[in-house]
Amino acid sequence: MFLKRTNIEEKLSLITKKEVAQADLIESVYELLKKDSEKEERIEKRLSGNSNRIQNNFDFDQLETDKIYHIDQIKWICIEYRLRFLDSKYFKGEIPAEGISKIKALEKAHNIDIEGFKIIAPSKLFRLEDKDDPLLFAPIGNNYYYLIHRWGNDLSPMRRAFAWPFKNIVNLTAIVLLISYLITLMVPEGLFSKNSSNAEFWIVFFFMFKSIASVVIFYGFALGKNFNPAIWNSKYFNS
Image 1 (cartoon, rainbow, N blue to C red):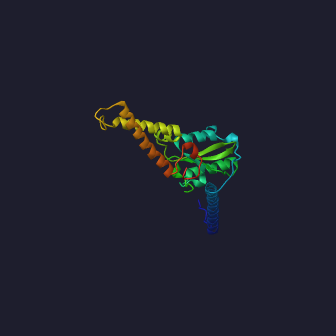
Image 2 (image 1 turned 30 degrees about the vertical axis):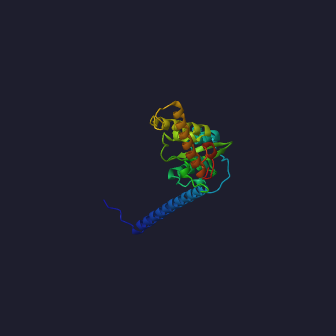
Image 3 (image 1 turned 90 degrees about the vertical axis):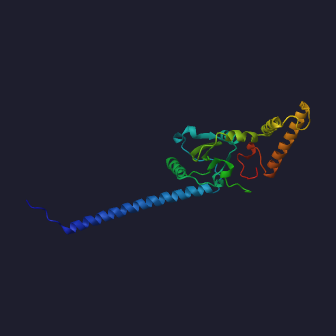
């Protein structure tokens, strides 16, 4: 039995073909990565740029209905937790890679370029003029928004309680009255006179209320603070 003789020319030809195929593969991968990188850059540019678009032409059959929210629902949650709902260009944090990937997947599935991004987040995460838990939205028309991605940590369970006094003037007055009453109860009896009486208690209470209210008013005016309904979609720092 004779072994087939080796044709060096054929071997060289096979090596050349493999190298060409590998080069084509590398070139294809490079082009794919280049296109993907360029798409990400375009998305990041739209996230940080100006856009007046109030609607994106999504294919509603492909949208997850539990991620569609009306502006009234967004407003309510922002007021309850003292959050802001602003254009993504004001967001000073970094949109995670997972969020960018979800945008790319949505754009590919719906064959559109998404614009008009909005974000829900605490004020400290925005780059506000005059100088946790962000949520990225895109408008779908008629004051409805589609939730694309959520990242970061959940809000503190106490945030809603801390935000409650700042919902309106009635809540703020109520909390000042309550604090004044509790502090008055801690004042020792007979501190101002030998015989304690109801009249003395209410005089001390009024003094405490006036003092605490003065501090609250000074803080509000000095720092330009406002109530939750006035700031939920404001781009200004002093609001």
